[in-house]
Length: 214
Image (cartoon, rainbow, N blue to C red; front, top):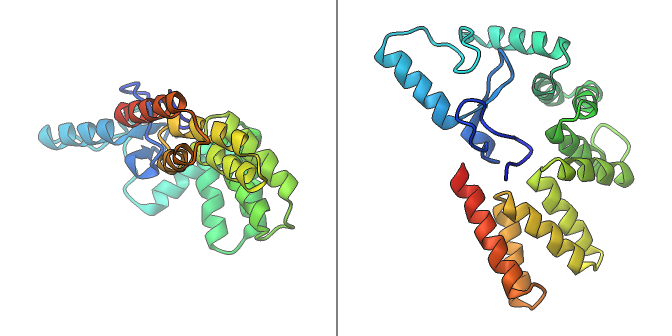
């Protein structure tokens, strides 16, 4: 089962939830797994080819200025994969309001990562009035779209509110998407008798399958 990151458009295998194991191409906003990106670079080196995007074949950006220019073009086209990093850049510069607007727009376009980021902003109240209700709303939207970290956070909220049975269900779903911490929490729940043996075993198998697929 794929997470909110979907599948690599080249090999069609699920993209790992670890963002360090994939690359968002600024030219076309496609998320490429490290395997396909590496294979493309090796081919280019061996055949002395120009470095191009492994998906759309657009020449790769050579400078940070070209990267930003590509992102601006994609952002102007309302591409959520471009809107997200634009928001990160503004947030680092201290422009929290503008950053939130970019993230909100990406969330409105159905991007799960944007919903997750907006949720954290409302939860922490950084640059915006703290609003737990809005935070949970965006967390739920991200979780529904397959975001394992959002799903795990919902489990933690349920657990802290004394609803262990609901927390366990969230952990099982997140673990099946390859989320390690959810599996560890399930292990603890199993040790204390909050999870049935067959449910824990199924979660273990699903987690391993998700990890192996990436």
